[in-house]
Image (cartoon, rainbow, N blue to C red):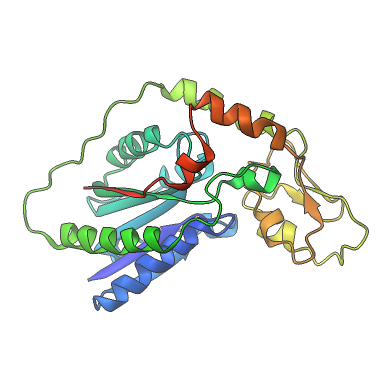
Length: 273
């Protein structure tokens, strides 16, 4: 059996889960290939679906769905009836619509979704002062990732008739979530910016930007292209890139979701199968 793991991982959380899945597949003597689609160029290459017997897709959750650039990438692929699974990483908020809407997208593009999973991971906006799910994913999340891998492979190899996995219809429509996507950028009033003269001008921030938004020479991201993924900030070798401090919104965020930091820290990763 030949399996593909295709994932988007700006700050490294989704890649950590993808690595656990890959290692578990190797333990099971499965032929596995990893495809990191975080870079702009990687998403431009044609994906030859016929080479694989099953596919794991891995995405972070941005504004309650897989990132728009990942959804647009999926829209260019014909699944040709292949079985697949999707795993998400999220920082403790707004995860439920993601499963429902990714299934809708995969159905339209001829994939057969047999399972999905969600893994608690440090929130992207922790780089801006939040404290959501720090130090996650951890060992307990990795154990669930291994369990998810085994259960999903069993689904891939099963000869039983395909039974679509069902998710509860969310409260929010696609149009409403499109508006939520725009709000993500309003939270961050200062885009990733260089605020130090000690930069060596290595150009890494510009080279790795998923949307070609970062201009290394100017030291700031383009407001029209930036998706606030913070890949540039997370990977800057000199730590001279920053965004604005939104720590003052942390308590407001918790209150809005009727959550506590302790409650988020204790959240458990889940499998849907």
